[in-house]
Structures are given as structure tokens and as C-alpha cells.
Length: 415
Length: 166
Image (cartoon, rainbow over all chains, first blue to last red):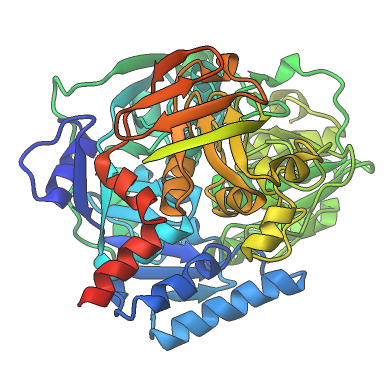
């Protein structure tokens, strides 16, 4: 069995599972935020049953906080009321994006089954956990019962070998994979990443890769845990978990090979995540806004690389740059390292950690025909604001380079 | 579960939930409010077309991108009785069934059906009949427990039945 199959088998109390099989799996962590919660609170209360295990529930107010409109404010109030009523201790308000906090606050371990009412719950696959997304209503089931049905996915093996060049990152790997698979190319699949280039990636880089698998339709993304994983978790005081490995001879429906040493900075062009090109092939696209943030690209490594550009040159006068660190921990460390001062001095607007501009909820909404380049994971029409707005997606280095150049730019040309 | 209805609207491939229920238009989570803005960015006449209640046809990867339940809630509130698509994105598939909105996967169907066509779908038998052409197509099988979920109106009615018995 591969690693995902092993985790699901163990969670379902079975010796073996096969792709296509439907299993009932015990859930180890249930996550929701203030936009998903209100969709199920009333329904859950109507069941008149306690939450199965409060210690396993994590609630985060992160999507639009501080709120910019009454709807968002009410979502936060309803979420706070639910947390108080059920005495949920694992509640975080305005401390960062839920998927970053899940990792930083020690809720993730290898081998766990993590289910969230948010697509990018898949990020935690970077730690060798089975992490997948469901909708709000399904969360009512999980809170009542502590388990959930899954169809065991077929797995694709994505082997990435070779050494990444300068200014090429995990984000570029996953964008290239998207270009290969297409927006629906991984529907219902596990994307399992392996190879020397994956091993070389930092935890930040691995999280960026697993984060985006949902946008090719995948059920989960996963990377086998290794010394780096354990070092990261130990630094947070997190022990335990079960580090499963895929068996030699484990079944994969398809294998894809990517040579990292030939990879260039990538950009996903409007209006879909699989419209991927080498950045240098995208010429003369002026941008109005640049956004560095989100659970995809707002980590410390992203901010460090972005800052390299802004130490040398300011933000282009025609560009509005918004920087939104993914968590308070990252924000504070970025302050200590002088990165935040660098961004501000260069002309950026630095906001508090939250989902921000990504989903069109605030802090960088796009207007009519506005062009934006972003470190986020999605560029569908209407994602960040007006349906006519155009969104390009790239690594933090690519976005920073573009913010300096005033147009979509290859980071290797600018630095 | 058998559904007989008429196709009132048809979209293509990769219809994202962001387009079905755009954050720009959402001001409340109430179904009626969401129903009013359903698919506004794709077709400004969608809500009008769906008013009598009927079938929405889509292509590949219907309901992709964000996991937001606003999307199937908006469609159901706007009058969609059944969505037929080549295939659905996985989170949307689960969300629609959980909300009691019947869905059918039938590869190639987007090419075959037009607005105005009537269809008859039998979820248990796994068939889709198009009386207009006399064709009977096979649909991708839905697990029986999910058909039962649709029959009782979704996951919450199912859970309420179970917990009220206790």
C-alpha cells in the first residue's frame, strides 16, 4: 500500500484498503473557520448532541478579520458564540491563517486523518498526514460522530529529481505539475510527491506544494515524513504521530517525472490554475496590484526571498503591493529580521495575518479589469473581486520581481 | 430515486464555485439571499431561467475550486432540481448530496443535452433517459447510502432522524 492507503486503513480499522473502496474512518482533527461555521451551527445544534471530542476540534477566525462589512462581522460573532457555548479551547482569532496555525500550534502529526471545512486543509499532507477538505454541512456529521466516509483514492506518483536552480521554488514545481495535469487532472486522486528535489525542499516549500493539490481536483497531497519533518515538529514540542512509508511496489495509477534542474520560474495566467507558462514567456503584462500572502505563499521563506528584491528597488509607482504574513509568528519573526521595514520602506502595505485579498473578502479586492500577480493558489474569474479582473499566480520571488518591474517579470532578470 | 425534469440552463467546463456564488455578491448565508445571486457572473439571466425549477447541465469538473457551500445552496435556492454534468469536482459532489441537491455524472452529456430537453433520471438503476431522442444512457453509479441521503433531503435530515431516535 502507499502512504495514504496505510493511513486510511489504520483509521478505518482495516488491514488493507483498495482504491475505490468506501471506508468509514476515524477523524483525528476537525478544522473550520468563521466563513464555514455559520453554514452548519444551527443544524448541529438541532441534533442536540455533544461534540465527539473537543480537543480534536480547531476553530480559526481568519478569512476576513478584522471584518470589513457587517456580514463578515456577524460570521465572527456567530463563530465566537459557538466556541463559547461548546467550550472549545482550540480557538484562534486573528492570529493567522488556519492552515498555518494547524501546523505551528502543533495539531499536525504524521499519520493523522485531518478534515477541514476549507479546501486548503490539504496543506498538512506535507507532514505525512492524510488531510482533505469537505463542506460546512459535513462538519456537523464529524462533530457529532468523529468519523467520516471516504472513497479510497487512486494515487499518482509525482517524482521530482534534480536540483532546483536559483529563484525556483516549491511553488514553481506545483505550478509546473498543474500545467502537466490540468485543472481536473487529479480529480479524486492522491498526489504523492517524492524524489531528491522534494527531499531538499524546506517545510515551507513542501507546504506550498501540498497546499495547491486541491486546485487540480485532488483529494489529498502527501509527502513522506523525514528528518526535516521531525525536526520541525520537535521544535514545536510536538511528539508522536506515525510516519508511514509507501511500500516498494505500492500501486500508483500513474507516475509523472519532473526534472527540477530544468525548471524555470512559472506563472499561472488568467483565468485558470493550469494555464501555466515560463515567466519569461509572458511579456509586457503590466500589473496594478501585487499580493504576497496566503496559506500558499505567505510564509517566512516567501517573505525572506521577496525582501531581497525590495532592499534594492522600491515597488513600481504604478503598483499597489499588499503583504500579508500567514501568521503572527511569521509576522513577528519577519519584524525581527527587518523584512517588514524593508517592505514598508519600499512602498508596500503590510496587513495583519489573515486570508486577506485571496478570496475577494477584503484587504486587496480587485476592481474592474484590474491586473494582479499573487502568491495565492487561485485565479478563477471573480476570485479576488470583479469578474473582469485578471490574476497571475507565482512564487513570492516572481511576485516581488513583478512588483518592482511594474509588469510580470522573471525574478532572475530583476535581481 | 427518479427525477423527471427539463433542462433550463447549460454551462461548459470548469465552472468554479467562485462563479456560482461570487464573494463579491454574497452578503448573507441565507439560502434565499444566495439564490438571488446564483451564477450572476456567468449568466445574469440564470435566476430568471431557473425560476420554474429544472435541470442545470454542466461539462467537466463542475463546481471546481473553493469548497464554499454557498454554491450548491445558491443553485438549489434558485430552483435547480438536478445537476447533470460530465463529472463533478469532489468537494462539490459531496456538498450537493449533503444538501439534498441531486446530481448525476454522465461523461459526454454536455454535448448531448440542450436547453429545453426533458430528462428522466433513475439514480438506483443508474440510467438517464432522453425522451426527445429515445436514448437511454448509463450514469456513473452513486453509492446507495448517498442515494438514500438524497431521498431524505440531505445529511442534516438523515442525522436528525438518527439523533431523534436516541
